Image (tube, rainbow, N blue to C red):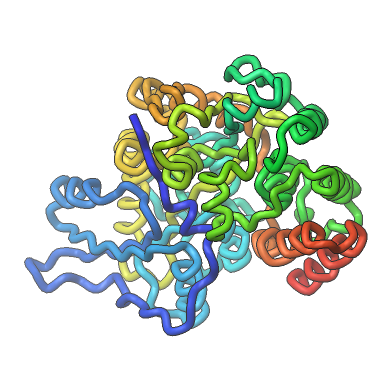
Length: 428
């Protein structure tokens, strides 16, 4: 089974261009037959198209009107603009995990789904950490979890063999056991293979390490921790040291140069959430089919990158109907349908145990058993890291540019000061 999920590219692409055309406000009753019209706003590919028709068949009094934006940046910019304006939002809105902290900071503008949603929706439907990440500090449930991006490691078998490193998915696990072993293997690799970096971008590695910390950029009182949490500086030092030794290709993720880096064999390893398999296949192309492999190992034990939630704004004129629709879309059966349609890896416990998911393989990656692999990786994710308002912006607009400046010649200390100052501005 070969899935390509482009939504993650959309979610991490550049922010919206000016002049975005907004969609009409949802919630009005449809003129046709007096049906209740429920609008839903998503971005990229959620795999919901056939599910809309199925829900209408099961609920003849409901008319589903989908609004889809190609990129996550414009979608979220429009959503927060309408949220601030107090009008114009759909009945159900998708919120990507990187934007969820900002939404949680505006929780009064969303309904508590634990109050207005169907009574049979239990927190046990989801993995604990996924459910917890949809709640604000007071326990208000803003979003029903859709997909997730459990992390594994992808790598080039042929380049590993060229470097004299083990190349089988089981054999390479020792290389990816810890961040220390990962960077040590990187030193071995670049010593043997000319003109190929160990990883694509310092920011990609740093962000994965950062998300594994017990406390991230903010504590639960929304205090910025970047200077008080020594683990953040330790991660910074490890990544910038590895880059200084030549391990980073210095590419900006999802840029044209990064895309070309796959075909040009610019790097040998890639942090690999479930949706990244489709990105690699699309960018690397058929010539490298079978050369890329994926293993169920990740330094530090695991993590998550990506995934979304379905929320119901207080602007909705039909909040209970909207909540019922969102709850149905996130039932395990529907999430398996979405996985088959778009590769959206489910966050629901029953879906992760489904034979349909566990039997999924990927021909491009040597018939890797990706369903079983990523289901196991999802179970390795521990307690949800608290994300304060501005967390995603710090990753994107502070940490990434600061690391890029180091890759372009700034000293690690100069880059660190750039990160600290930018984070303070965002948090202020």
